[in-house]
Image 1 (cartoon, helix red, strand yellow):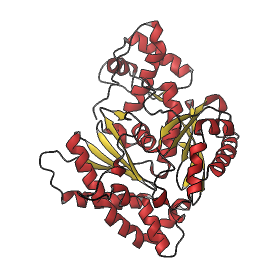
Image 2 (tube, helix red, strand yellow):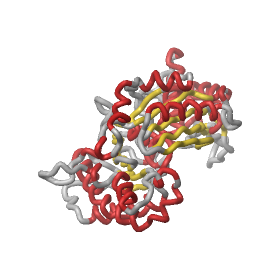
Image 3 (cartoon, helix red, strand yellow):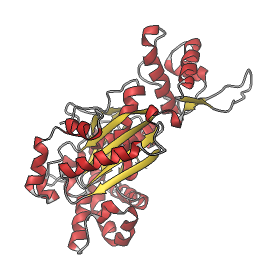
Image 4 (spheres, one colour):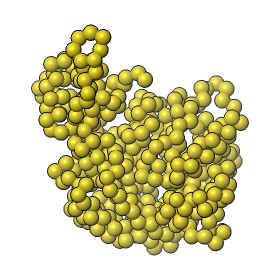
Length: 395
């Protein structure tokens, strides 16, 4: 696989030493373990400068050296990689059916997690859960406060929207309008959090920790209660003017119709099928292993959801040349695999003349993608060269 460079070039001036350190960390995150000579080549710094930076990052516990690799000539080269234990962060996802909080290490491994499921998102209940869960996580043996970089939060762009689809009482959703979420969470946990849209967070998690690193231009699709997406161009997550780029749920399904992709390809439709069969809609969020019991309903939902997603991929490809469509969601691996197959079958029926069809790739973050994306925010803030890419001001 071809090595990837960070767009900005490094500088040898002492005044930008911290920025150069971020470039080293970001380049290793993109490419995996690298020796100092290769780091210098990719970043555009002198070998001496890279040697000093790598030495300091290793001393700080952010990098670890691997086993020497002997080449054809010369001294063996020593690759350096991110130290998983070098940093930690906490991510919180506030959703329409559930809230999750995770503790992760520097490479995105989940060290601890807690979640709660509800019929409707009541602010007071969610804030109480966040406060108690945060206090629980930071007391665990797996948490090292001296390595904790901060807290990141992601939420839907308009959690009080689509009231009719959610079936929630108006007073519950309207209660969100009077809350400044950033202040409320800071009061609950005693930490000022960073914020991001939940679909962008999921896309960012896949970009940092999953398959997204391998495709410079891709459309990311995440299916939760509602379907959402993220767009990556030239390796960078496109946020948009209002932080709502790639809101694919609003794409129309057909001409002269108000039907949108969100009406056909969201888990909300599977919830409705469960309710119509006399089952509890929250089953989907409480027990990932319980999906197998509803395989017939799940298969029907997949058949109905796939064509719209395939059409969205064609539409996006016609606007920007895509390398890949990455599909993921809050469902088990077997559901993602069957949905991917159904999307491929639906894409086969479309006319791709004039554009190059992107490959379809299964995501890897699954249920935890949005909380992972939230947890990535503090890591980006501390260590990424472009640390503003996911952040937005809280409502």
